[in-house]
Picture (cartoon, rainbow over the protein chains, first blue to last red):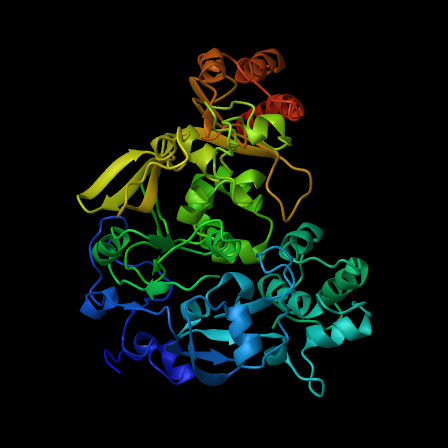
Length: 215
Length: 324
């Protein structure tokens, strides 16, 4: 490992962001306004000759945090985060339905932000923190949103539910007491073919006074 | 997906060097490209990930000049109070992408350079979708969502949410390539391909879109999208307008249609008609008619001509802050 530059993120997840691709192929500067926007100036930390290295198409060893656990595995660059979670790490809460970034059944949080795991390469999530429905709570210790889905019977076949639960948690984290348009926009990236929207609305509306808070 | 290599450069220079090699494609948010790769519509030897490239992400507001890095996500832009206050029409355009997941993943550059949604292209028949005998599958097939301003054999529509607004504003694109930096009007990022080998954007091999810059001072803008449903779909038609001058009179008007042509469609005659005029229901209706005067709808999309009129009228009304 090289280029060890432990950030706050990395301290929390236990490894360096700049060494997440073992072999040091990449350096990611997370978020924020980098220096030299649109001027082409390299940032101070950016000059890393190894960053032009091409990895794959065979397996590449990566590190990422999944539901609070640091995970290390070797995946081909073409493996999506969704398939890597389900098939390699046995984290099967996120569901593979449309696999085209439309239905929302694969919704997970990446560094706290809701994304479609089917539309992210797992290698792109290296060094980041992933939370799936399993990471929000367990059957014995459910997250408020999970409990509210049970209380309001907000599922039918249940296949879209893990994605809806994660999207709802993300919505309530952003808007603890969302308005009707905020609910529609906040859950606009998820489909339920059974049509359980009424129950899901009740879950979200519960956030206004019913004890559901953002996660 | 077929196997491919992956590189994650740290600088624009490294990215440009990697992209110059044949078979390399830039990976931004991935929401469009991964679907194209899964469906085998596009093939790559290597993806060049832009997520970790320094200097491509962020928003600067400097006087009236708004600079947006190409890797800024749509959500980051929507959450930037300064940018939205300076250009409220940005919120109108971004809110049309009514999926939080897509706003979090999708980038400004990715929105501008996403590939067309044409279902012939998405089924592997190419951007022009010509049959072996040279006839247009689009013209003779199901073209309900296609162009009302076809250009040659290009009959798909530009799907970008931000491009019509940026073109109406006269924004510039900042492009980096092997020869360094060049700037061009956002409008000039796009072309209607003439051959099966050409793309719908004008970037050369090795070039990447670094960001956009727009002067947002002293004009009023609006975006109006006509949609079949509020989420999980692209609009049927969109209009972006920019008016300079205050009050009911427009010193200069720029009107641009999205989802209408293979490129963002500048309705120059409509803008000229309004320039120097007071905005009234009559002048606005005349501009809306002028915007579609030279429309050439196909067998199944005549309805989009009226949607374009409506979108222009409502966008003008919103920009001028009046009921029209």
